Amino acid sequence: MSQQPKKKSLGRGLSALLDNTGEGTETTTQSSGHSSTQHGGISQISIEHIEANPFQPRTRFDEQALNELRESIIHYGLIQPITVRRVSKDKYQLISGERRFKASQLAGLTEIPAYVRLADDQAMLEMALIENTHREDLDAIEIAMGYQRLIEECSLTQEELSGKLGKDRTTITNYLRLLKLPPVIQLAIREKKITMGHARALINIDNPISQLNVFDKILDESLSVRDTEEKARATKGKVSAKHLQNGNGTSQEDKHIEQNLSGVFASKVKVSRSGGKGKIVIPFSSDEQFRKILALLHAGQ
Image (tube, rainbow, N blue to C red; front, side, top):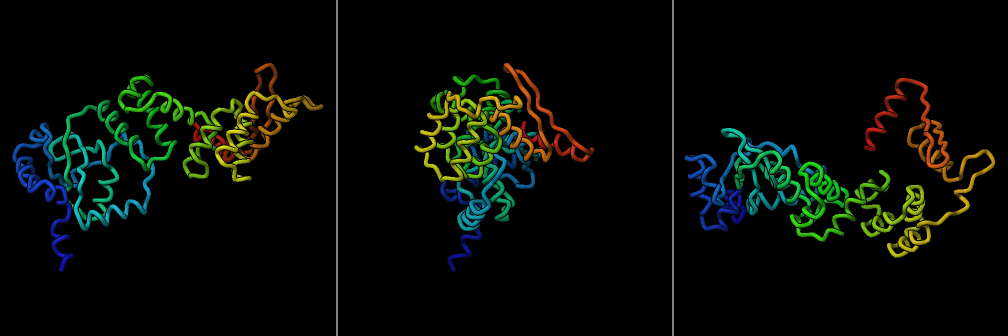
């Protein structure tokens, strides 16, 4: 008997909390568009009239968490409204709350409570990025990419970004530095094979090859963050025998680079350099192999 009332209140959890405030807001919205929401009102908007945010920085959603939110919405309604902007009559675009929006779709809602705001593309991007970079379920690389987009696409300095996010500038700098790590290490961060603590230690190693060497040890030897920091300190600025030239003029370091790149591109890569200058040669034997190499190069950008 307790299930039926819950299903009748599907999607109206917010209205229940606000003592029927949603009823009046919905009526106002139907009669006067989104103007009533300019003063903080909440509108009930048809889900089919809402489109995804093209500036959404999040690229992945945890399926289990999404299903748990769906179950919560089925039983209690959506408690926290999404935020949208109106782009035309009966057409809205998400600014923030895509996870709530997706879960509401899965729950079978036809309407969803929303704040409606006026925003141009730049303001929309900034609001979406700032809202999402505060979420706990983003991985460190997604946060870093969000910060990078705010800086590049919203023309913000790190200092300005620090003020908008309420975060220390050093924290922002450390996240941005993650994007300079080799792609294989960035992927490991996203897949939670290594922690942010491991990543911060690897950042302090100047040489990408040395970063990869220590990264391999983290995985092979299950190094703790403290062990990784010690390895990083021992590696940083160290000139070892691996950097010395062998008989044919190719350093051990360059040979390691050649081996890694050859594995990535499925081609016998050749590295030659001297005095800070040189070249990387990636041979290919067919148009198909050439296209695969190009695809890999683009994926790493």
